[in-house]
Length: 272
Length: 272
DNA sequence: TAGTGGTCTAGACCACAAT
DNA sequence: TTGTGGTCTAGACCACTAC
Image (tube, rainbow over all chains, first blue to last red; front, side, top):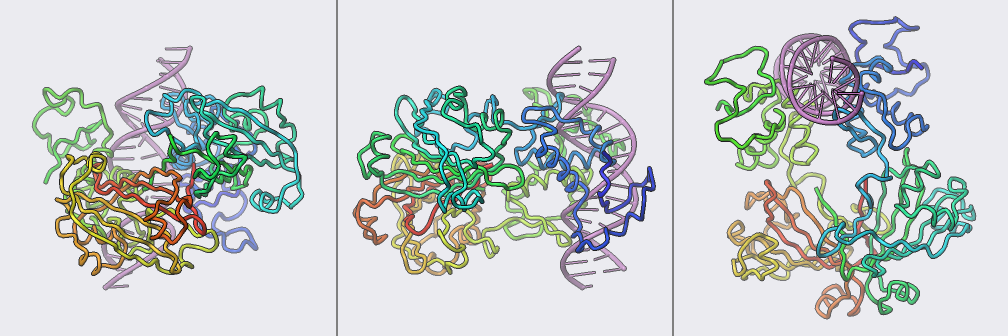
């Protein structure tokens, strides 16, 4: 488990084991490794462990000193690597307890990716959202869905259709497309058994953790079907929100197309 | 220029000047200063200097070692303070050169707060936006505008109306409201003389630097006036984007209400 | 060559949580 | 009391920029 391959900028002052060859010469044939700092390499190794499932969402990862020993670097270097992963919301630090793998499940942060807020009051005062799944079937990916998920057109994808309601008012109508291979066992029954946030279900049942997402927003007029589902007149302006969500390593794992009512809610964004 | 008032967690190992009283006892009567780390206090001091205009947008601030000497702390502590300010986009670090005060002017980052992107191509391939100012007048703040800007209803505000066009297609119609006192000399002529980004003008002409902003987005139908200005049929769905922009210290300094065409563009957002 | 930020280390101590 | 992350220091060296 020795992380050979770490190319330090400066060799540690106290050379523990002189190892094989000279630490200064890069691997033969490597096209100029383009110097990356030690802590970035550590970050990469930690990411690999996260990806490989060595530590699962919610788990406690080894302490900083332990990791420092494992990687043969100082605690400060491990700290900086963890700092960046925590800034990216992949890890969560808790003083006195340790560092944990971030999770969408049962954190007090429901709706981590949902930016829709009520015009008056807070997200909590809305009470829990009502999730009604309208459909879940395995279909062949259309050209655009395949392109977004980096599949081939015709590959199998799981398509979920659902409505979210607040206070009994249907507010979000959305379709999800998921790669068929990664979500093999996903059915209507699965969804019914796990009423919580969908990303939590993805973690616990399919080992897929969504790390970040991109959204493209437009204003559109409600078509017939949407109008009925959202209980608004046809033609009502709605937000069209297209989300592409990624796992580790920038692999797209979910395409989501939603229509949001904005008569009592708004999409909120922070700019800095 | 000695920053007395810094309450260190641990007294510096080499006590330079024993100063007045014991460093452990907080100021009398202070309601439990609620311990904040040294680097946070340094961050606060740096913020004060930014606010006070000691260093203006684009300026080079003193080096880390110099600041460390000024504040009587180690370079690492200053570094951490600067790191956070850089993360907040208030400072910009440039290796080998120094640390600079961030600015909206002549950075290669035009449109720092604009999230509208063309559906195909990039922001740059659009060519420079055409800005047409339709009006600039001093008016009395309505109740909602006053509330947003933390003024009294009836206080004077500057209202600017303008249209942004891409490729000759009018795409954004927006109104701006600015506190009358801070923007005393702002007229149509001022705007005409400075064709660049508006936030750059605010910096250079009025010493107001926008630091962050919040946006609330809804879908609305184009009313008569908007439809004409944006050259779309009345009733066309548009994005309604309400932006509240803040200077240092979370002081709101601009309210902006925009209507965006999204037939060839979309509002992009990154979630993490 | 000098000065800047960037990396890395080693060690000390503090704050917090669990035992 | 122990172990964790959090803060702070001091010093060394590297990488980039300018002169």
